[in-house]
Amino acid sequence: MEKADTIVLMAIHPIVIYGEPVLHQRAEKITDFDEELATLIADMHETLDASNGVGLAAPQIGVGKRIFVFNAEDEEAGVRRRGTFINPLLIASKVPDTRPDPDEETEGCLSVPSLDFPLKRADRVTVNGLDETGQSVSLTAEGWFARIMQHEYDHLQGTLYVDRLDKRWSKKWKKEQSANGYNVPGQSWTPGIDPDPFGH
Image 1 (cartoon, rainbow, N blue to C red):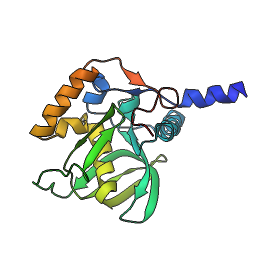
Image 2: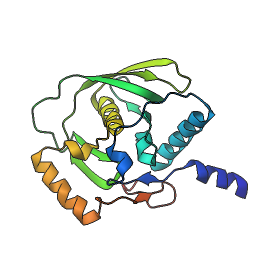
Image 3: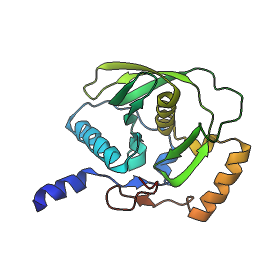
Image 4: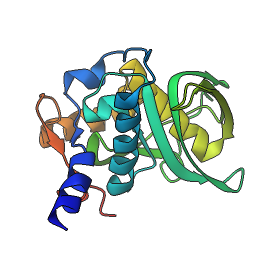
């Protein structure tokens, strides 16, 4: 029993926090579809499930590779989607010029624990990439699920959602960033061990 518990814990990776260099760099393209990659994907899914999040990019667990996983309701399509995108390319509709609605358009991020801010996003996206076997996959999404795709894709570009906030919300973010110490490397939290920063 102890051995099984140890295996589970090893598969759940700490999630690094804003300020860790890997989060702010463009991730590298994946070229080898091997056992190491399969293990990484399995670990990412397990870490995501333990975090109660909807998406997780490899840089968030300290791995600078172009891969993200997701597990969330696609309300527009009426289905729950769980999957993996490797070396993705995202094509988005135009982001509206209007201000984000604090009640309907707020985001959070596992790498910016306990905080959330309103952000305007494109309403429709298409993501093309590869799955864990190297086969081509494509997904078109709207609404909330499109927001998730944009959020995770941004991580692979070295961009976090708080980097995109408008002037008003960016000012609030800078205050919270300073108050929480989210500006230095070396910080992380581990799902299933540390308290859930979003209170799930």
